[in-house]
Image 1 (cartoon, rainbow, N blue to C red):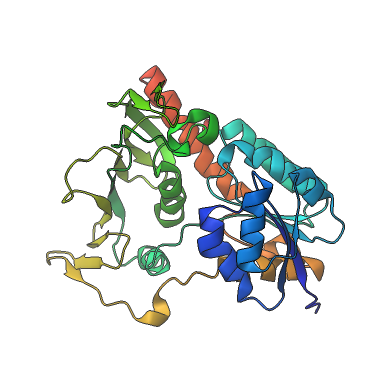
Image 2 (image 1 turned 180 degrees about the horizontal axis):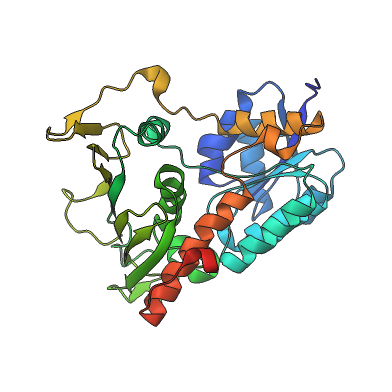
Length: 351
């Protein structure tokens, strides 16, 4: 089995790359970060100096064209993910793409088509593994809750309240059809309880204008609240509410409740999971450390690349989520917009 170093380049080494991916790769013996390309040479050089990256490229095309790289990490905003991912794969390099996958469903399908045309290459999207997600998934799949009857998700924050600041997430030209944390939770819900059969949606943008960095008023088109309801493929009913304009602190946070005929589980996505059997009150579950979800994203990707190098088939070097799973959650994102626009139920699987 080959254990030769995997040589990596970074395009767009932003906050998540500095906080997670670069430190994570530093702990993997087989990983070597060789080059970085950022929006400016100065910012790329700062990253290179901070993390000991030997070389800086002024143009991302030059980085992808390098013959001494095996894989590329993409950390730009979503508006570049499709172009970069396709270029990386067509250059014969393994591709790690930061979440969110891309701007819309059409772009996601294009990315998947190119990935399927290069089955010898690993493709992966950065996951958002919550501390107890794997424990919760095993609990649901074990049947302990019985038949799942309903799912409720609330993702509430104040992230959109500041009228004097506009982030890339509030600009459709940078974030596409994504709204708040809807895409992240689409991935999570798919893994825990499966996809929607059909859904309805309502969108709202109560703060219609903000002041940009130039001091000018700018229209905000990315919704700041969304409510989604429908039926899952497993028959359970589901309702989600996402908000970025909560003014109080008490209601802010993420909470998922899954109800079954034999029990109920509630998870706040930090470190508290509560469980109740039929007829009993919810009680906190003390999850052992060995059953908690650890951040192994970079090691998983490097391991898959090594497996691919050694001839393993895609099914034998699976990483999650990959582009195929990304298309599933991008279908939901598209379905939400279509349902909100038409006022009619949309079936994501038909998109």
